[in-house]
Figure 1 (tube, helix red, strand yellow):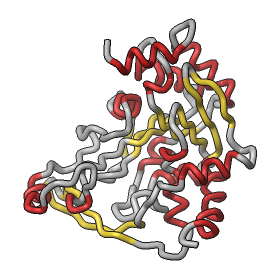
Figure 2 (tube, rainbow, N blue to C red):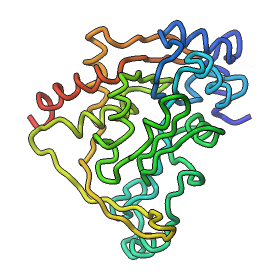
Figure 3 (cartoon, helix red, strand yellow):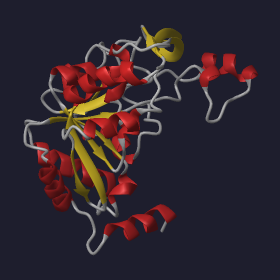
Length: 274
């Protein structure tokens, strides 16, 4: 048994977390049949889940039903401009080699990077569609999946040409499972839309397939910064628009994404760069 499993067991309580108990917890939070929901999840923070990541996904699908659509991040931040790597950095002499040799993003094959076991499991399931952005892709399954993942623009991967904007159009929900607002990617859409003193853009790069051939693509995007996302989330929760309750051995937070993004678009100019 790993240390992580031992900690999960200690967090769980009298009974293990199951598909049925998770589905009840999701319903108690307000997740309903037919919902379109973007899920960010830390499996270990939910306690010891009987069945692990597949069980969490099964419970989510039980909650939203056949008419609902699940969406999860399938990010690949390791397929990025090596000069920007900080945790850890790599020698400058490696940069041109990485740009020339890093395998191209393939939505069907490329694994997720640092988004958790549930998202990695989800992106490989039958019927899941994945957007084509080489760093900021999203995976979705359900009636609205094709609309959500289609046409993901290379520049501004969290902007108006992204699945986040399609979720906004659909008035989707965001569900945080065992994670806080620092993981709430929808706030990046607000960063793209809002203005504040000192807002900047940056260059990025990724290996992509064009006409079946690998190439290094460069593009520009907002310089995203999640350092104040927890503060935004706390301020938004104070408006009473976040359902917060137990999920397994952890906590879940459920909210409407459009309301969150609109709130953050007002919050950012008032607090950033002031």
